[in-house]
Length: 124
Image (cartoon, rainbow, N blue to C red; front, top):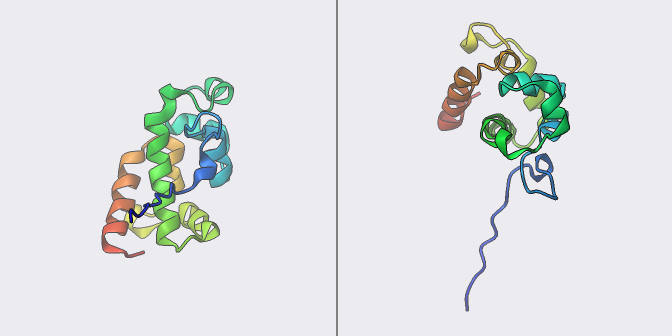
């Protein structure tokens, strides 16, 4: 008897159900930030991101924000409200900057490293 393995995609609500691609508008809504902030974070102009929020050309950069978000939600046991609070609270390990500041300025690399380190150690 063959067994079927179910693979679950974290945060399917962040994907456009029609195209199957990440959607900048949905990500912005989930993080409670403006689409303009997502556009800055991925180095794009806001009008273009608003017009085509799931464009294939945006996917590689949207995946970076997606990975940060789903990792934080998993670290906080699925509690999205606490994950949002974490994003907005100053953090000693990030030179007292709030993690959201890295998204707002498009400087995702330090935040990615920090979230990966948190995940590897399972520490918050």
